[in-house]
Image 1 (cartoon, helix red, strand yellow):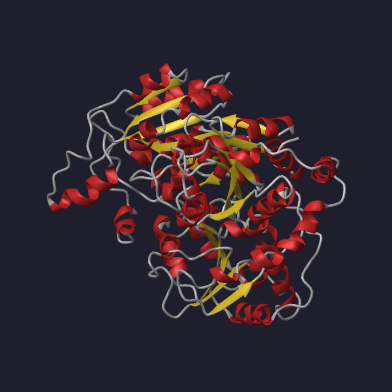
Image 2 (cartoon, helix red, strand yellow; image 1 turned 45 degrees about the vertical axis):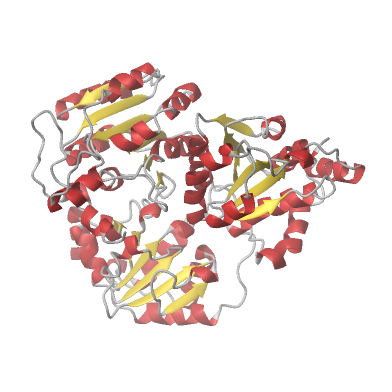
Length: 583
């Protein structure tokens, strides 16, 4: 067994389920070793797509995903997706071969490259250390919830393992010895990590609960007991903790909201305000602004979530709960930071709130009242906010389009959204069934990631209809991955909001009289391009054209459907002016 084979075998033994990439000579053997170990390998058409597929798969599956690339340009091609994953703290492990000679055309300073984009660098040093090196990199991704670039020097990959290392690999394959837990204790110091209680994929009970509550938990319990208008804001770090947060919210009368990446977390609750920040509906913004206590659960309170701080009232007390102490107060000052797992912290704080659960009608506690529940049911969704339909002249209003799709598409869906002027419409007018059904790769604000995001999400959630929402710019930038969708047999709906422009730039610079020839384009028949890749396709110019979507949904859904929507582009999205203030 050589080093390349050992790396693949170790990762398969540790529980890696899926790897994404483009194979070249440098990662050929390690990728085959992953496949031999039972890992599903998904070939993308571009490393940038592969990186984002892996990112989305990790987010939606709750597992570490692997990206495998060729040395040199394979790694640099993947860099935008790696940066997005690193900024989002996605548990992603990048297998990055390294040229053996500094004079090679493929030579790069890979450690510097990883550091530059916020990923963590690791390295397989030799055949003697390959097992420990690989386990440590995997654990850094898993436990630290971070993106790790594992450098695999080509000369080291070819080294034969000594007998002791071969036995270690065989032990891992056989599930003996708990090697990954032993390694966790060895790396706790250098990486500053702890091994969390393991949970099953459905969010079942953790093995261990915290012992004595911290002083910060006690202070949070006191704040909740005194609050008159509390609001809970869930981020990605709250995934799996809905039951505990709702139980605590009922005790104190809290309303529920989410950051964009956690959309759907409280779907179905009568107290759900949906996404706040720039995407917030008028009622959601009003209620969050009126809160006297705002608690962020696994939420980093970015400028987008808080509308640059303006969404949270000046007199509100702000609390942030996060596993990572370095995340507390980074994006805005907080009055109290609580270090801990969201689910376990919510349980512990719930036990500390004074006395038994209050008697009486739970709909009349804290911020809650029967009248407010009726108002939330009537007004909080964007589709219930009145608007003047701008459909006409061969173009459909994106609100009308998205409401029509929301009515047609099955409720059991997983939605992925690209970046651009259009993005608020699918994000806020398409409902999702829960917090595991919306994938939002927007930490780097790169266009062109949406289609690959949808592929990764679809593979992680195979029982749901995958929906990709793209602008025309992002769709054409990533169009090669349509072949991947067809090849994998994914019954995906790809919606392209086509305004024949980079709409964000048009609406940002156009009103000031700047020339727009660099950001506007002639018409492109995206539906015909999609058919060339083997997709079904419909062009939508008004509501009647959505009948083609309804026909596809009847089955057999044996080809993906591209919905080429010719949307109106006369006005910017409601959130766009707010977004550009943050640049």
